[in-house]
Amino acid sequence: MNEGLSRRELIKRGGMLAGAAALGTSFVAESAFGARKLVDGDQLSDFSHLKGKTVGHVVIDINATFPTRASAEAKRLAKKYGFQVQVVDGAGDYNKINQTLTTFATKKVAAIFNTGCEPSLCKSGLDAAAKAKIPVGAMVAGYQPGVMYDVEVNDWISYARLGTYMTSRVTDPPGWGAAIINWPNVPALRIRSAQIKAMLDYNKIPVLADEVVKVPGFVADAKQKAAALLTKYPKGDKLKCIVAGWDDVGIAAAQACDEAKRDDVFVISADGNLAAFDMMRKGSSFAATCSGDVEGITDVMYGQMSRILGGKKKPLATTLYVDAPMITENNLPPKGHYPRGDGLQLYYY
Image (tube, rainbow, N blue to C red; front, side):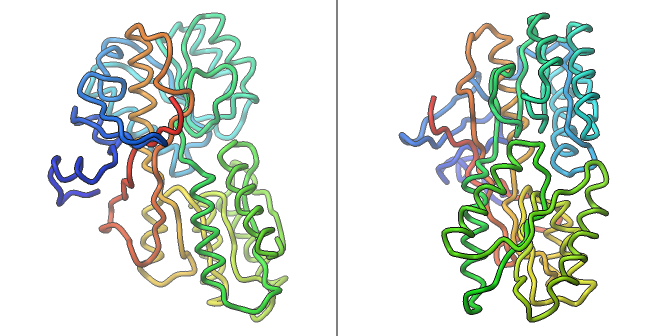
């Protein structure tokens, strides 16, 4: 959380802390073309155009830590900046998600927000929003027709980091392999699988299994699938790493490894989860995660919508990325806290 640093020191570090938006501080945004300073009242730090309005916010599945954190941050922003937010859990059911979007459109909310719900599977709901002329902003959903912008963790980078960790850690002779446990119905999760598969392929490491978890119910299902993999590949066999789509799944897989006393298998995943950090502290099979600044991503998503409601025709960019630092046992944040990374990264605007 960088709580020991002053504002001046934070800014001097060279990255915009997206979470600082709520503090009304200045920002430094790192882009491919160099740093760009964003001052008070500019695109990210001004929530004033949301004041007095009601907005709708649908999340993919509240049982996952990422949507839970996004929901909590949305409610915090609403309380602080004087607007109303209606958060609805989609429970992984795209019929329910489309119905929710349609209901928001019927109620004529000022804006709609989407955490993790893939736009291509939300066509009827997004069509209803478009017909009602209600702008839609998204986070970790992918920029597609129907949304004005999407705020992301750059999962190509995250899983390149994790893949580098994996291939650097395993020093066994050729022939070892990795298993993937994921869910394909979120664009970010598909990117994670695609990137890790590309790295495995480049390094001539076989994918021993590519498991799809049930949603809802992914925690129990992931643990069961991991246990089955450990049975199929006993100690000393090919399986060395389980790559999870997100930390709730990774924790479940690591629990299966720990309970089976499989210290020859480690787990990597992404999103950032306090329980995952605690497992690392205890020397669990859970080895590495790329920890998303969920609060910062949520702040950017709401800040962009305030910009649009304030009369700007376009968001700052159609896709905005917020850094997700890789965390291992060697750089854990203080207990109970999340790391922030380097903040907003603009690759094109």
